[in-house]
Length: 123
Image 1 (spheres, helix red, strand yellow):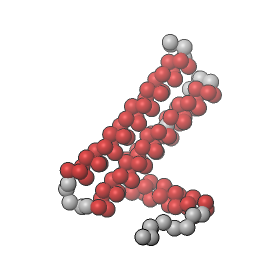
Image 2: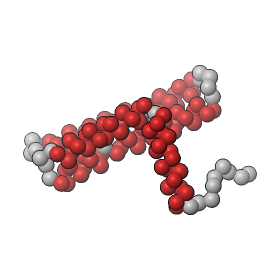
Image 3: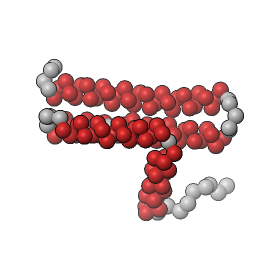
């Protein structure tokens, strides 16, 4: 059985990733919102009066929801490929993906909260 998998090439794989990024940016409004949040909070993180280490933690944590949204979009697209009709398992798969995004945002908020508490010596 031959899989739908092209021959490995670092350049080709990088291009596939770039194509995926462009496609998801064009077609997924939730991803656009995640990117907007990423850029806004990146500016906030780098402009706070805190050390480079704390700002780096805040900045790097912003990738978590963006990555979760990519995974969620992948799940949704796969489900849509399999069926266009309503099915409870399709709904559950999509809901699980949405839960992953929600949890990633909660974790990022906790990282920000705890980092800022330490950075501003509140605790």
